[in-house]
Length: 76
Image (cartoon, rainbow, N blue to C red; front, side, top):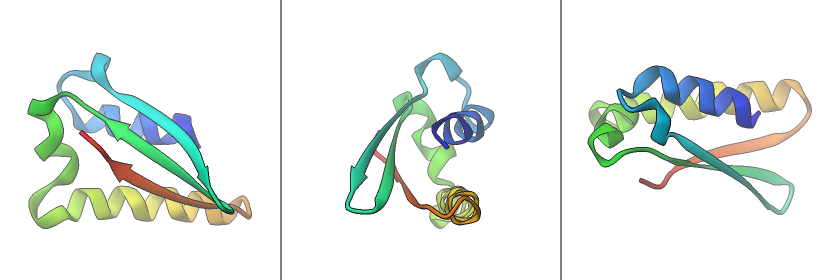
């Protein structure tokens, strides 16, 4: 799942070398924290958060298919 998040975010940004994803567990849910370059933050969030919500939906659906729970937090 971490690779999926990294792949999807890397497609959105200009500075792909600065994309970092850290996974942690919060109960039964895996939380993926996404770090990007400051100039790419708006591209990952999108207008009114639409891109971020789409990213979360894709990751949650992929996790659900595997019988897991997952969420994505965009940190910076």
